[in-house]
Length: 278
Image 1 (spheres, rainbow, N blue to C red):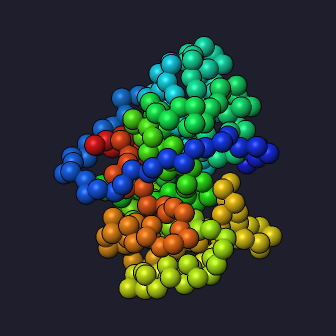
Image 2 (image 1 turned 180 degrees about the vertical axis):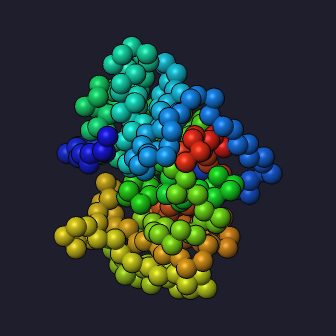
Protein backbone atom coordinates (compact mmCIF):
# COMPACT_ATOMS: atom_id res chain seq x y z
CA UNK A 1 0.00 0.00 0.00
CA UNK A 2 1.53 3.31 -0.97
CA UNK A 3 0.96 6.36 1.18
CA UNK A 4 -0.95 9.12 -0.62
CA UNK A 5 -0.17 12.80 -0.07
CA UNK A 6 -3.45 14.58 0.61
CA UNK A 7 -4.15 18.15 1.63
CA UNK A 8 -6.96 19.96 3.47
CA UNK A 9 -7.78 23.58 2.79
CA UNK A 10 -8.45 24.23 6.48
CA UNK A 11 -6.21 22.39 8.97
CA UNK A 12 -7.40 21.79 12.51
CA UNK A 13 -6.73 24.80 14.70
CA UNK A 14 -3.89 24.06 17.07
CA UNK A 15 -3.35 25.92 20.34
CA UNK A 16 0.39 26.38 20.96
CA UNK A 17 1.54 24.11 23.73
CA UNK A 18 4.65 24.21 25.76
CA UNK A 19 6.89 21.46 24.38
CA UNK A 20 8.46 19.46 27.12
CA UNK A 21 11.95 20.61 27.97
CA UNK A 22 14.82 18.25 27.33
CA UNK A 23 15.99 17.60 30.86
CA UNK A 24 18.77 15.06 31.26
CA UNK A 25 17.09 11.66 31.15
CA UNK A 26 17.34 9.35 34.08
CA UNK A 27 19.36 6.20 33.46
CA UNK A 28 17.12 3.81 31.60
CA UNK A 29 17.25 0.23 30.54
CA UNK A 30 16.34 -0.43 26.93
CA UNK A 31 14.57 -3.75 26.60
CA UNK A 32 14.48 -5.51 23.23
CA UNK A 33 11.68 -8.02 22.81
CA UNK A 34 10.94 -10.20 19.83
CA UNK A 35 7.40 -9.94 18.61
CA UNK A 36 5.15 -12.65 20.06
CA UNK A 37 3.04 -12.37 16.93
CA UNK A 38 4.04 -14.53 13.97
CA UNK A 39 5.47 -12.56 11.09
CA UNK A 40 5.82 -13.73 7.51
CA UNK A 41 9.16 -14.59 5.98
CA UNK A 42 11.03 -11.36 5.34
CA UNK A 43 13.32 -12.68 2.63
CA UNK A 44 11.37 -10.99 -0.17
CA UNK A 45 9.80 -8.10 1.72
CA UNK A 46 10.14 -4.54 0.47
CA UNK A 47 10.75 -1.54 2.71
CA UNK A 48 7.03 -0.74 2.53
CA UNK A 49 6.26 -4.30 3.65
CA UNK A 50 8.52 -3.81 6.66
CA UNK A 51 6.84 -0.50 7.49
CA UNK A 52 3.44 -2.18 7.30
CA UNK A 53 4.57 -4.95 9.67
CA UNK A 54 5.80 -2.38 12.21
CA UNK A 55 2.60 -0.37 11.87
CA UNK A 56 0.38 -3.40 12.50
CA UNK A 57 2.39 -4.21 15.63
CA UNK A 58 2.14 -0.60 16.85
CA UNK A 59 -1.63 -0.55 16.53
CA UNK A 60 -1.77 -3.35 19.11
CA UNK A 61 -1.17 -0.55 21.64
CA UNK A 62 -4.45 1.11 20.61
CA UNK A 63 -7.52 0.42 22.74
CA UNK A 64 -11.13 1.48 22.27
CA UNK A 65 -11.93 4.87 23.81
CA UNK A 66 -8.45 6.31 23.32
CA UNK A 67 -7.51 9.76 22.08
CA UNK A 68 -4.68 9.16 19.62
CA UNK A 69 -1.97 11.32 18.09
CA UNK A 70 -1.75 10.42 14.40
CA UNK A 71 1.70 10.87 12.92
CA UNK A 72 2.80 11.99 9.47
CA UNK A 73 4.85 10.23 6.81
CA UNK A 74 4.98 7.01 4.85
CA UNK A 75 5.15 4.73 7.90
CA UNK A 76 2.51 6.66 9.85
CA UNK A 77 0.18 6.35 6.86
CA UNK A 78 0.16 2.58 7.35
CA UNK A 79 -0.75 3.11 11.02
CA UNK A 80 -3.65 5.40 10.12
CA UNK A 81 -4.85 2.90 7.50
CA UNK A 82 -4.78 0.03 10.02
CA UNK A 83 -6.70 2.06 12.61
CA UNK A 84 -9.30 2.92 9.97
CA UNK A 85 -9.69 -0.76 9.08
CA UNK A 86 -10.14 -1.78 12.72
CA UNK A 87 -12.75 0.93 13.25
CA UNK A 88 -14.60 -0.15 10.12
CA UNK A 89 -14.64 -3.78 11.22
CA UNK A 90 -15.80 -2.90 14.74
CA UNK A 91 -12.62 -4.18 16.38
CA UNK A 92 -12.04 -0.64 17.69
CA UNK A 93 -14.59 1.96 18.74
CA UNK A 94 -14.81 5.46 20.26
CA UNK A 95 -11.43 6.51 18.90
CA UNK A 96 -10.56 10.19 18.44
CA UNK A 97 -7.54 11.13 16.34
CA UNK A 98 -5.44 14.28 16.62
CA UNK A 99 -3.58 14.62 13.29
CA UNK A 100 -0.11 16.12 12.96
CA UNK A 101 -0.51 17.43 9.41
CA UNK A 102 -3.06 18.35 6.78
CA UNK A 103 -2.37 15.22 4.76
CA UNK A 104 -2.78 12.95 7.79
CA UNK A 105 -6.03 14.72 8.65
CA UNK A 106 -7.43 14.10 5.19
CA UNK A 107 -6.33 10.46 5.11
CA UNK A 108 -7.89 9.83 8.53
CA UNK A 109 -11.13 11.61 7.59
CA UNK A 110 -11.40 9.53 4.41
CA UNK A 111 -11.22 6.37 6.57
CA UNK A 112 -13.92 7.54 8.95
CA UNK A 113 -11.63 8.27 11.90
CA UNK A 114 -13.17 11.04 14.07
CA UNK A 115 -10.78 13.96 14.37
CA UNK A 116 -10.10 16.75 16.84
CA UNK A 117 -7.32 19.20 17.71
CA UNK A 118 -5.16 19.77 20.77
CA UNK A 119 -7.51 22.65 21.59
CA UNK A 120 -10.20 20.01 22.22
CA UNK A 121 -7.99 17.27 23.73
CA UNK A 122 -4.84 18.74 25.31
CA UNK A 123 -4.09 15.38 26.93
CA UNK A 124 -3.71 12.31 24.68
CA UNK A 125 -3.51 8.64 25.61
CA UNK A 126 -1.12 7.56 22.88
CA UNK A 127 0.69 8.87 19.80
CA UNK A 128 2.09 6.68 17.03
CA UNK A 129 4.49 8.03 14.42
CA UNK A 130 7.48 7.11 12.32
CA UNK A 131 11.06 8.32 12.71
CA UNK A 132 13.91 9.20 10.40
CA UNK A 133 16.64 8.08 12.79
CA UNK A 134 16.62 6.06 16.02
CA UNK A 135 19.69 5.86 18.26
CA UNK A 136 20.44 3.23 20.96
CA UNK A 137 18.81 5.43 23.65
CA UNK A 138 15.59 5.64 21.60
CA UNK A 139 16.22 9.31 20.84
CA UNK A 140 15.04 10.34 17.40
CA UNK A 141 15.43 12.57 14.40
CA UNK A 142 12.04 13.35 12.89
CA UNK A 143 10.56 15.85 10.48
CA UNK A 144 11.85 14.93 7.04
CA UNK A 145 8.17 14.84 6.07
CA UNK A 146 7.91 18.49 7.05
CA UNK A 147 5.54 18.14 10.03
CA UNK A 148 8.04 18.34 12.91
CA UNK A 149 6.35 21.20 14.81
CA UNK A 150 2.90 19.63 14.98
CA UNK A 151 4.39 16.19 15.55
CA UNK A 152 6.36 17.39 18.54
CA UNK A 153 3.40 19.28 20.01
CA UNK A 154 1.06 16.30 19.73
CA UNK A 155 3.59 13.70 20.85
CA UNK A 156 4.73 15.76 23.83
CA UNK A 157 1.08 15.92 24.95
CA UNK A 158 0.70 12.11 24.88
CA UNK A 159 1.04 9.69 27.79
CA UNK A 160 2.81 7.22 25.53
CA UNK A 161 4.66 7.71 22.25
CA UNK A 162 5.22 4.60 20.14
CA UNK A 163 7.57 4.88 17.17
CA UNK A 164 7.40 2.65 14.10
CA UNK A 165 10.40 2.21 11.83
CA UNK A 166 12.25 -0.22 9.64
CA UNK A 167 15.81 -1.26 10.46
CA UNK A 168 17.35 1.22 7.99
CA UNK A 169 16.49 4.00 10.46
CA UNK A 170 18.81 2.70 13.19
CA UNK A 171 21.93 4.82 13.79
CA UNK A 172 24.73 4.81 16.36
CA UNK A 173 24.30 8.57 16.92
CA UNK A 174 21.77 11.16 15.78
CA UNK A 175 22.76 12.79 12.51
CA UNK A 176 24.76 9.69 11.67
CA UNK A 177 22.72 8.76 8.60
CA UNK A 178 24.06 11.77 6.73
CA UNK A 179 20.48 12.67 5.80
CA UNK A 180 18.56 15.79 6.78
CA UNK A 181 17.99 16.92 10.36
CA UNK A 182 15.28 19.56 9.85
CA UNK A 183 14.93 22.92 11.56
CA UNK A 184 11.71 24.88 11.01
CA UNK A 185 12.34 28.63 10.73
CA UNK A 186 10.23 31.69 10.03
CA UNK A 187 10.40 32.98 6.48
CA UNK A 188 11.70 36.37 7.60
CA UNK A 189 15.50 36.50 7.08
CA UNK A 190 15.78 32.74 6.70
CA UNK A 191 19.27 33.08 5.16
CA UNK A 192 20.45 34.71 8.38
CA UNK A 193 19.39 31.66 10.40
CA UNK A 194 20.71 29.22 7.81
CA UNK A 195 24.17 30.76 8.15
CA UNK A 196 23.97 30.74 11.94
CA UNK A 197 22.95 27.07 11.98
CA UNK A 198 25.78 26.07 9.69
CA UNK A 199 28.29 27.98 11.80
CA UNK A 200 26.94 26.40 14.98
CA UNK A 201 27.81 22.89 13.77
CA UNK A 202 30.91 23.52 11.69
CA UNK A 203 32.93 21.04 13.80
CA UNK A 204 30.51 18.29 12.72
CA UNK A 205 31.06 19.24 9.09
CA UNK A 206 27.48 20.44 8.86
CA UNK A 207 26.01 21.74 5.63
CA UNK A 208 22.78 23.74 5.92
CA UNK A 209 20.36 23.87 2.99
CA UNK A 210 16.97 25.44 2.49
CA UNK A 211 14.42 22.73 1.66
CA UNK A 212 12.75 23.22 -1.72
CA UNK A 213 9.77 21.55 -3.37
CA UNK A 214 9.61 19.79 -6.70
CA UNK A 215 9.43 23.12 -8.53
CA UNK A 216 12.57 24.42 -6.84
CA UNK A 217 10.61 26.85 -4.67
CA UNK A 218 11.04 26.99 -0.89
CA UNK A 219 9.09 24.23 0.83
CA UNK A 220 6.40 25.77 3.04
CA UNK A 221 5.17 23.89 6.12
CA UNK A 222 1.56 23.65 7.26
CA UNK A 223 2.46 26.52 9.60
CA UNK A 224 3.67 28.76 6.71
CA UNK A 225 7.33 28.43 7.71
CA UNK A 226 10.46 27.28 5.87
CA UNK A 227 12.72 24.34 6.72
CA UNK A 228 16.51 24.45 6.87
CA UNK A 229 17.91 20.93 6.59
CA UNK A 230 21.19 20.18 8.37
CA UNK A 231 23.44 17.49 6.92
CA UNK A 232 26.15 16.14 9.24
CA UNK A 233 29.28 14.25 8.22
CA UNK A 234 29.64 12.90 11.77
CA UNK A 235 26.99 12.24 14.45
CA UNK A 236 25.98 15.09 16.74
CA UNK A 237 28.24 14.96 19.80
CA UNK A 238 25.69 16.15 22.36
CA UNK A 239 22.12 16.07 21.03
CA UNK A 240 20.60 17.66 24.15
CA UNK A 241 22.96 20.62 24.03
CA UNK A 242 22.50 20.90 20.26
CA UNK A 243 18.72 21.05 20.63
CA UNK A 244 18.95 23.75 23.27
CA UNK A 245 21.34 25.85 21.18
CA UNK A 246 19.13 25.60 18.10
CA UNK A 247 16.03 26.55 20.08
CA UNK A 248 17.82 29.62 21.46
CA UNK A 249 18.16 31.14 17.98
CA UNK A 250 15.63 33.87 17.31
CA UNK A 251 13.50 32.90 14.33
CA UNK A 252 13.79 29.17 14.91
CA UNK A 253 10.37 27.61 15.43
CA UNK A 254 11.29 23.97 16.16
CA UNK A 255 13.95 21.34 15.43
CA UNK A 256 13.82 17.66 14.54
CA UNK A 257 15.60 16.27 17.61
CA UNK A 258 13.00 14.32 19.62
CA UNK A 259 14.85 13.51 22.82
CA UNK A 260 13.65 11.37 25.73
CA UNK A 261 10.16 11.21 24.20
CA UNK A 262 9.69 7.69 22.82
CA UNK A 263 8.10 5.10 25.08
CA UNK A 264 8.76 2.24 22.68
CA UNK A 265 10.23 1.78 19.21
CA UNK A 266 8.94 -0.98 16.96
CA UNK A 267 11.48 -2.02 14.34
CA UNK A 268 10.77 -4.28 11.38
CA UNK A 269 13.73 -5.97 9.78
CA UNK A 270 14.96 -9.13 8.10
CA UNK A 271 14.62 -11.05 11.36
CA UNK A 272 11.04 -9.94 11.99
CA UNK A 273 9.58 -7.32 14.32
CA UNK A 274 11.41 -6.18 17.46
CA UNK A 275 10.09 -3.92 20.21
CA UNK A 276 12.55 -1.76 22.13
CA UNK A 277 11.07 -0.12 25.21
CA UNK A 278 12.26 1.93 28.16
